[in-house]
Image (cartoon, rainbow, N blue to C red; front, top):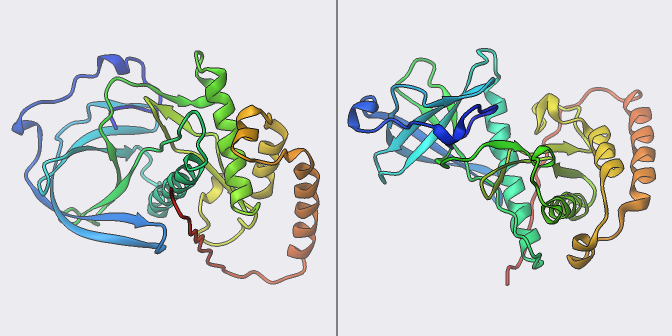
Length: 274
């Protein structure tokens, strides 16, 4: 996306230019997560991957990639962690899709500030050894990425919108999960946290970063109910913390007395947009 995890000079990025900056065309499977169907849509594609990283941070590097089918240039976010589980890539893209759906539903309530998440998908580089799966995002120029609450000049209106959006995801999911604490790059939000009531299951969205009810409790303790929350029709969550703590105690008690199972969760939403 043209940004890095911990940029030192994102404003001075020098992008490669010319056809010689890309490798030879190669086959790739493009995977887009369709949340309403809870499945991956696969499209065969031909891509040319940049020969060098043009930006990098502590955890990942950015590599240009051109889709030869439509000519669009995107960015591969390549992790430096050789042991990074491939399922985490799929989970991260799924969470971004859930966040995007929640943003569409939130925006339908007419808030002053709209919320938009970075669209992303996966390329499987089919001609390479082990056919690696990589996260792909749009190319966004000259913007650093930072957690919303850590941006020095973030406005109070943006912080109120963030509080309202987080609360919206919790109430709209009937208190089963929360999408929170995203980063901002340019006008987009990206890479939010995802905490769900049931998390101790194999392959759960968010992986080890999903802190379950404890993560939800952190949100409830931090949340500042504000005028934006009220204007989009959200209830004041002042009593929800006690309710959630009680749920955690009951959950932990029952968990000690049951056998380990594997569950599959499907979040299905049906909305009418006007």
